[in-house]
Image (tube, rainbow, N blue to C red; front, side, top):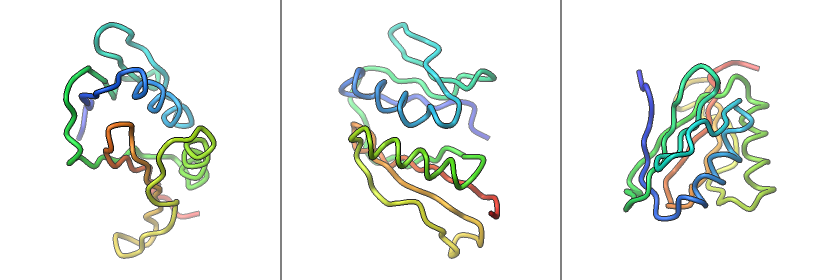
Length: 119
């Protein structure tokens, strides 16, 4: 189980904007504003951003409660000009209900939003 994720970024302002935009539909907001910027959903702090040289060889996924929320994250990202990777779709080769969409953060990391529920 993952408790939290800390990501180094070349451009802290762009990354705060990106994660604020795309995590909003999941109920997250920025909770920490010091040198490390932290995002949480009211129950926990899950994502921290710090200034530094990033690794782009990272893939992580945020769980969404429904396929509609996966779609909403993708549409918010598209509307705000964030980098899109793959549109939301079923991936039955993983399992029959695996529904995911993919974005790229400002440092090029693959960020997935996934729902495992049947709809």
